[in-house]
Image 1 (cartoon, protein in one colour):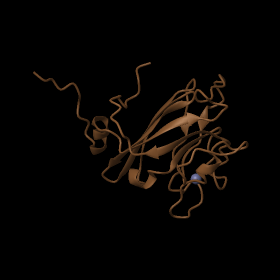
Image 2 (image 1 turned 180 degrees about the vertical axis):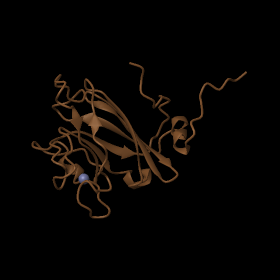
Image 3 (image 1 turned 90 degrees about the vertical axis):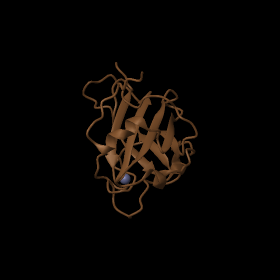
Image 4 (image 1 turned 60 degrees about the vertical axis):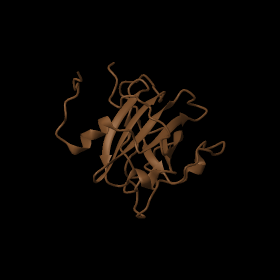
Length: 180
Ligand SMILES: [Zn+2]
């Protein structure tokens, strides 16, 4: 006998909890953050996209007042290479289809709030579909996004990067946050 263990929530967006993502970026840190890793998953829903992020190894300065908030954007190029000053310089600028100022870029996303170097985050957007961002990159920045300064919100260095790809596998892992 099969017993259904899950409660259906009363939202058409909640079906992502039963699905594989339409696109995934595996994030890695730059040389100063070699322990950073995790995934950003993109799920197509009727009017837009749900983005689910889980990252480990973010900066943790152990200051309760510091915020530990990190700018988070989709950049135009799927290239996580760079130079001595900017390890992910070749990711380019924020993905921007409509030629709007920051934070109106197509690829601007809510910043990550980290707790002891860990973050789990999910949000809904109608700015892009998963298909529109495949082949681009997700960048994690060293500072919070001020949502004002041009062209990128004064969010500091690019400390993490991942190329957005069509997933080749079913991770089989739950996308809900872990019990801690
Ligand atoms: Zn932007």
